[in-house]
Length: 313
Image (cartoon, rainbow, N blue to C red):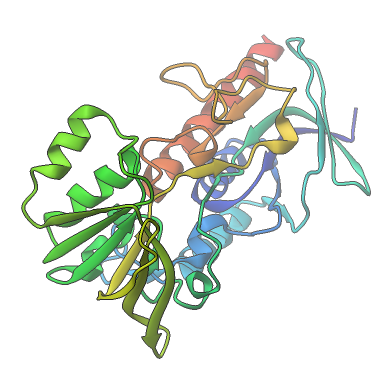
């Protein structure tokens, strides 16, 4: 029984590290497996200005380093390894098995915080200008384009929500819709079309991005009906074609929704399996913010602590 851990955290980021802080302070001796991207999505973000406690803002990587240091201060063990296979128990008090490919880990509780990955178009320019004008989160980065012109790519609720949000702070929003119709709800379509500073270009696609010093200056778009191309002067380009939860390794082991997000009980981090909890973007397709991920990480650790206590009762 000595090699069975009280708590394993799969994935890092705000949810994982917050869960680690709370679990460690509860003497659960958590061990974290960071995955292929230690620190999660925020490590690809330049400035973070909306996380409480940083009045002057902070870079994403710096913030993740702070969170990791705090977790390690309470003796969380951080392993820079990826969990490649899981075998969850369905029994209360059962032992969960996880594998990195080279070793097996046994745990009484597992907190999943593997996050979600924003979908991109696959343009090389998206990588070049990431952090310099290309973003997948308007509520995260929209403030930096206050009073400027921006482009939003997408046709669903995410795109229309981001376009209407940006329209409140930006000079003009050009919404590129690949087909001749929206996929968004009627309410969001109506709101988008009735926002004066949003221009919708149907049958248009983003094919390239131009700029200097890694800062966006122009969006190159094509009319896929006429094949006519044109350049739009903008400072920001928001890709809003959805996110993909990082749940492949858990498929078939735990209940997921139709889009692959882990299902949790309302008002908790509990999944359908005893002793398995989920926190952050891996179970949240609505808010997707660092602060909400951190909050759910706290919930997961507290839920795991209560679960362990119930086994000893």
